[in-house]
Length: 511
Image 1 (cartoon, rainbow, N blue to C red):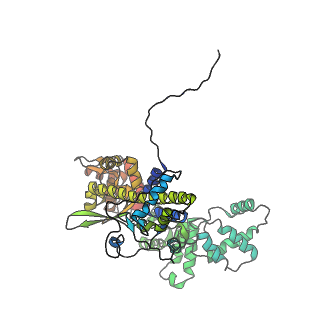
Image 2 (image 1 turned 180 degrees about the vertical axis):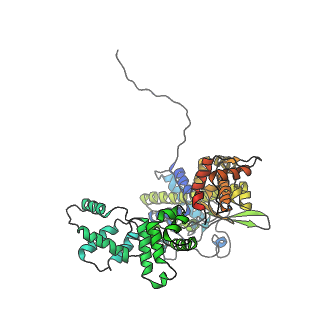
Image 3 (image 1 turned 120 degrees about the horizontal axis):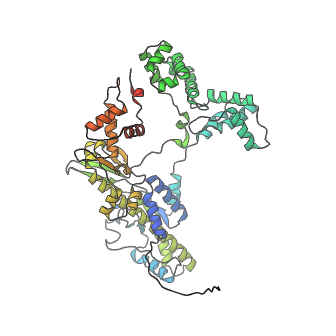
């Protein structure tokens, strides 16, 4: 049977959701935490010549007023930067109208997103100032150890072995491989380059453990790490004061597992020391660092910057929301480029370039404004629904589905999810991830809704208030929760206890 092919045209109607680059950018910025947003702004400052960073001057309320205190623009005036991607003459005509609104004034991303006074003084460059004021990144643990190693007296082959070993020290300060594995891997990576003999690696490891700071780096396991730190303490009479180093070394060397399992009676019997003496020695061991490498370099936890501060207003009896100051309000589009767009002598290529960059800058500023507005609206709903949490504490946290907040605000649930991602709020109860206020939950016997986080807080309270000489088992915790109208299976209690880093009853027992 013969087959034939032909072409034809037809029309059809359907609905499709197309994400423009502007929408994608807006969603990305909405999801960014403040620190990442600042990086994005810095990147845009370097790439977009029309975007500048203004130094903070004067009160925020006066930034968009002239020297006489009058607004730079009327309330109904809007700065438009439109156009298609091909940079048509119509786009240029629109851009030329910018001068009808402003001459040297700048389109700012301040609180009102109106124009602000130019910061250009003919001498300073906002981008260079921003880059110069950026804090230098701290060195890594490896860099710090190599700097110290250069001052250690050692034979050249031992020095080389030490440099190789330092490369295998992880962020916690440990060498996880054996010396044989280190040498084998080093041989594979160095090719034909001759390596020092094994004895030099052993010597170098000893020097690293004895001489480099922080004490404990270069250990191959927790026991060795703690013993190294005790050896450093012994070398300093002032630090050694109050220590029973012989007992502490014995506990680390022979009884780490017993300490983990809280077996004080067995340890007391084997060491001949009473339990109170053992507890004091363990308290001193608790001041040592199980992860010494984390004290150095850029692996430390990043400071949290809350997106909003929630405070109680005694006059109104309500909670006020204050959005924290982010880097965006000092951004502006320089007026000198508007003048270039207005000038008839500016060539078409230059106008196309400026059109694209001014448009991108405006999109960025509007995306930042939309981010701030959306997050604030979401936080307002959180404060409204979780009033009991702010008044009474974490045990009164209620279930709050994101889809419910989305319906109340008239936005998609995915937008709510992006708005709360990696955001934090500062409350009278402390700083919390915004996502914590959105969770499922259960219903108590008296019909009250309770989030799973609130159930965890109830469990934590029960454990904290137990008799530590006779701690509660998971089955007994289940009974205590049942008495409060909360029905949970034993395995659920065990799961939540582990999530809360609460030890077993045996490990919680105090002697």
